[in-house]
Amino acid sequence: MTETLDPAATRLSLGTAAARQLATTTKSAPQMQSISPRYLLRMLPWVEAKGATYRVNRRLTYAVGDGRVAFTSTGDAVRIIPETLTELPLYRGFEDTEVLHAIADRLVQREFSAGDTIVAAGDPSEAGFLIAYGRAEMVGVGKYGDEARLGSLAEGEYFGQQMMEESPGPWQYTVRAATRCIVLTMSRDQLGPLLAGSESLRAHVERLRAGTALAQNKHGEAAIELTSGRSGEYTLPGTFVDYDLSPRQYELAVAQTMLRIHTRVADLYNGPHDQVQEQIRLTVEALRECQENDMLNNPEFGLLHNVDLKQRVLPRSGPPTPDDMDELVSRRRKTKFFLAHPRAIAAFGRELTARRIYPSPVLVDGRPMQSWRGVPILPCDKIPIDPDTNTTSILAMRTGEDDNGVIGLHQTGIPDEREPGLSVRFTGINDKAILSYLISTYYSCAVLVPDALGVLEDVELGN
Image (cartoon, rainbow, N blue to C red; front, side, top):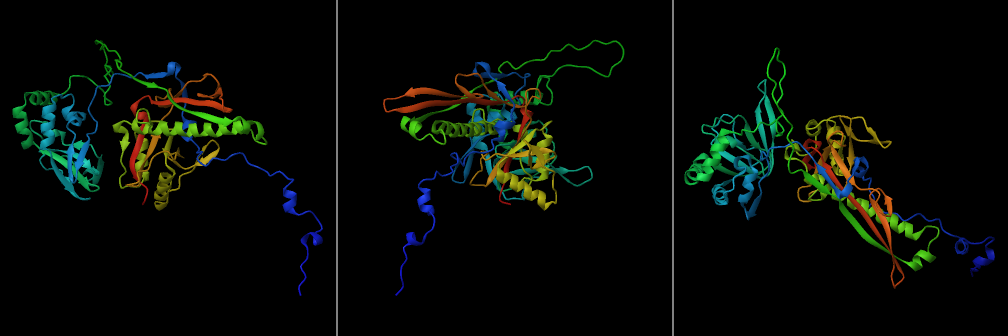
């Protein structure tokens, strides 16, 4: 028979289970998984917006109508929204809605598979085209007879404006479908009856053929008349710098919440960590995350929604390649940094590795970061990824007022300010013994000139 020993009789020291009852544990401060590096907030120069408004004054820019049209679909049938035709240079300023609907009704839908030729160089340019779905590439002949890529066309863009000329010449380039494309097209033969039946359209086309009488530079700004390279006595041109009469104004947005804490928690459970301060700290972190998300995705002032159409670049093959990043950098001077989703940075890294390119890292706040052409690529998980296409965007920006770049806007010196532009205001104790704190942060961002901000759109992450 086996004898069972009493553990207490054989133990020579105090057990850990009993000792734990008298010991205090070592505790961390409350942790929060959703805290991100928030590089956008850290890297942007912040400018005071007194009066909660910041006005961006620019030189007068003439509208050139380089917007994108919009489409609706019913089953497989795609139709343009007629009113959006005025976004195109062809119909800029044209106000006859009835004629716009007639034009939309006469557009013919065509579909092309990837690799198909939509138009070929040398063919007569007898039609205009609108890309309703997919992506196409414009290809020409290089100086030495090789194929040269001239650019990409995305959804909502067009080509074939020369069809409005009295005697259009042949196509100077080939347009090829890079993906499956749905195209809406109208020929000169279809446009003829519309011109014959609409006096307003005829007058609009005549003005278009005559060209604009407004002198402007390559950016569409009102020209400043200068002269150079002459000798002798001659009359100097007179000039002035015209300003935009309706400059854009940015008003500060707000993110707020009411933090509530029971006095029993604040009084009795305050050691070793101050419960009130920890609650405020984590709430402030959540508001800052909301602020960065707004500064990227807000439809009114978010950076992704305020990229000029001329600063939007499409990838050549899908994933972000060094060629695509070079194209993005070349659109502006003094690019300060790229901002990309971590998965986009990983996709770019795969392309670099495949080409055996290993750029030197760049130090940002003492930490080595992935870079391209000496410009750091900073991660931001708030840049959205389209779940249907597994695509995202990469931003590139120049920053600061002195460089006509992108700036953050806030107002400091507000009551009960805890951080610049953020206040924590005690609002009292209610009849249920609950403490209340109003936590607010005020912010916005502004793009001072269009080329300060660019984006590489529709970057594929799966390859």
